[in-house]
Image 1 (cartoon, rainbow, N blue to C red):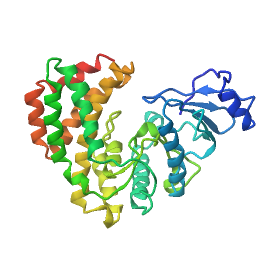
Image 2: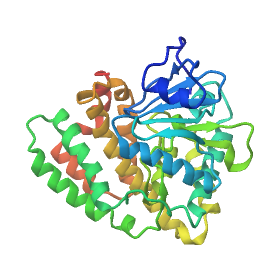
Image 3: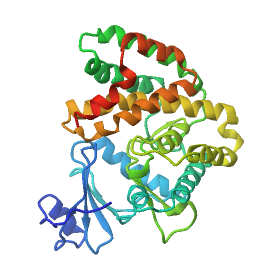
Length: 341
């Protein structure tokens, strides 16, 4: 995480909260915001961040709960030094500034970073206690709700006169059938946003602990292949040629038999990638139209291409054909929509 240049004075209730922890003289350096209402500020020289989340008490509680759970599993989530649920404030460990995104932009060894992230996923998915935490189930209802973001936001953006109710009913029915293999998948903890902006290199730690994990408060219990797809088919960047396949092979060679047969894991990987890209196609439009956050539209061309490739790899030609018939031009819409950012 990289802080803004100018520290700002404390304001209540943060001042009261930090005073209770002996930090009444501290200044805050706000960190850049992301798509969530959650915010972070660095306390320079303290090795800590102030997390503020006053609008999502469930997400706040999940962050605290999952941070402790991930640490108990042997992974590196920020340590929680203090919390005030009523105020939506927490004092957490500062992992520094070596995000995967920053390191990759500076030319760091891409293969090494992805190998570490894959190893962290293998560790999580291999741990028998990974799913022993109270979070929602990533069940068919939630998966279909996410698919409907495409119907409710992308589809009307492309075709304003479309009967969205009729389109969504058909779309969901097709996805319900497509996702049947996922319903039978082994259950594990799915972090949901396992990508370069939420991964950090902790050079002073060894093994999988060197992979710092951020923004996991939306974690669910479901198919581990979702996080694998989130990492290897990232909306933010293209991987070096061949890297995706090498990392898939690394994962498949390392996970234990209870995670499933290689062919089943690979099929679920492509299904989850297709589902994720479909959601993001609607999500990025929603962020622009509803939340006044147009910046994510710059990723639309890549996500559109990824969605098409994943639908093919997952064997979902029926869904592709339906989209071609119902939304002519959807395959090429990413470039145009990116100009709205």
